[in-house]
Length: 86
Image (cartoon, rainbow, N blue to C red; front, top):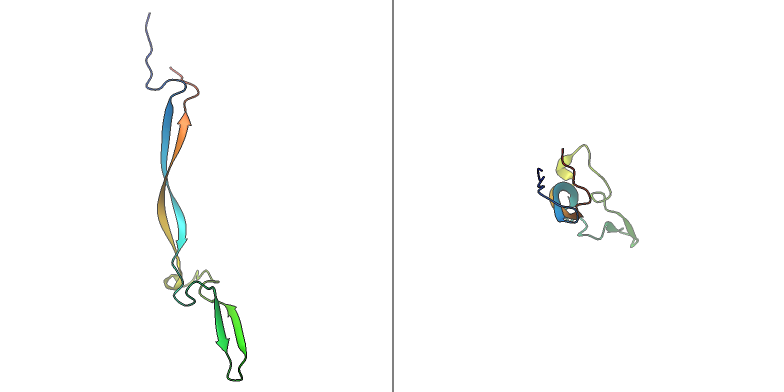
């Protein structure tokens, strides 16, 4: 009788490694992370509004964008639940 040998058996622990892209963002050089600008008028009034660079995606002008893509590795621990031999 022939014996079938498999590389993995039921209950063995294996790892699945993969790479994906994640979107990151550089710190804003205009507002220094506060996400708002403050403006003072000559009359003494103080106004604040959202930072134009942080609150816009700049789809037309990529040079102004703060977003960039980065590779990220991940691994999942898996357990063999079934072995098939053909």
